[in-house]
Image 1 (cartoon, rainbow, N blue to C red):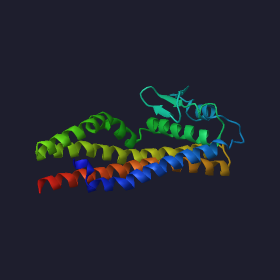
Image 2: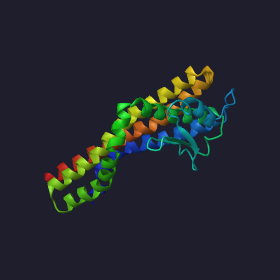
Image 3: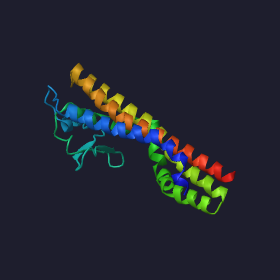
Image 4: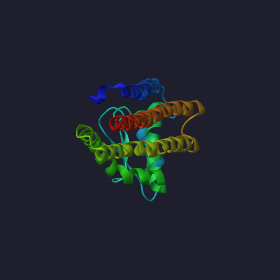
Length: 226
């Protein structure tokens, strides 16, 4: 079958980068989970101070799971996971501040965030349809169907490319918010940056993996034409 051919080797760099990114996130988060802020403020308290006030306050909630932290723009709710909510560690506060960064993006009408939200439904459809369409195109030697499958997968790469600046911007906002609020010392902020930079690596890995998979699909398609 086509998925056993040499083009599988193209996926190896993305796979290795993804594994390294996961390892880096886990190790860095665990390291700074053992370092506590001098202020004693917990992640939920910091979040409340950063985005819980004003004319459009964000509700702060606890959500079960490991690093399931996220900001829900539809409900205007920031949800913090078991390891983050109630913790005063540098890692927890950094993760919470990052999600606050997303809330600030929403409040500011940050264009890449709006674009990402807009394309999510289309990307979800494309990610589910690309393989059946591409495989059927190969099975029936029908080039247009293969091309449609490739275009469907290309949406995944577009999503990854849009997501990367959104996440980097949220991290930059997080550090700026913590710094301007005088909530953390310089060495604590350095720890936050390390945690958030490690997390950013996972989004870089997603871009690389998607780009290599798209290249692989194109090469397979061309080989079937020859």
